[in-house]
Length: 261
Image (tube, rainbow, N blue to C red; front, side, top):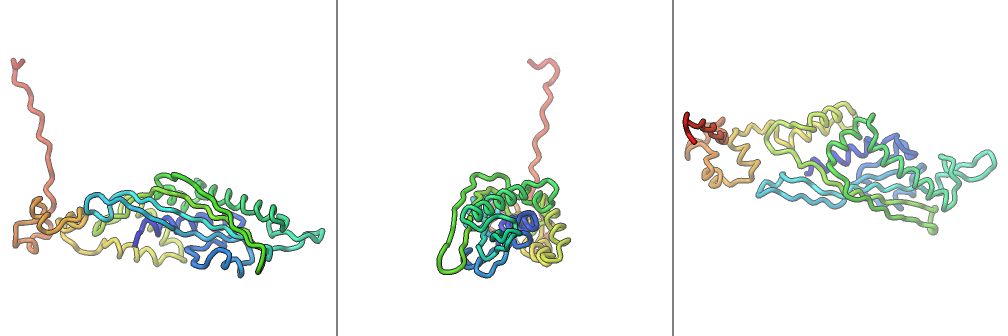
């Protein structure tokens, strides 16, 4: 379970909710293809999910290293979402004419609104998103459409190639951006249950001794931990729960003696 991926996806959904012409129709990880999902929708909608993910571990620490992921926003709108204006013309609820050009224009606007929402300095979820995403390396867009066998459909897939923070280490108290994330999650009744899930997965309450926490963070075997003097003496591990990795102290600079060249 990638907690970074979960949090980036969740922050995206929450930041976009109500911020675009899609209104509250922002879906988390919609499984159905976007054209199939559009069959039952009555307003523009956005589906958010993470596609490809790649992490570069440091040594054997499987949780270390930044993560690269493809964050996908799929926007859809169909002709069945139309109403009639005062002149009897079919338009979307946003007032756009129900033509190919009108549907594309609606997608253009929603795309702009969605990306702007992630940059909104007044949105706490967007601020969390920006804290998790360290850089956006590229944005790619693909068009989708269907004009036969069902309602006319127009869609757009936006793929943001993002670099993100690493997953939190196992067995230690959450720090950095994570307390802020948990506070936001706990304040939202729809997702408040995730706070305990995250704490459990991180293992804050695992009760590991300090030296075992260091061993886990570095991905060391017991033999390797002993070789690095991280463990207590052989046979005394259970009796020394607080034995921690030795702290390396830099030697103090030596003052030159009087008269030295």
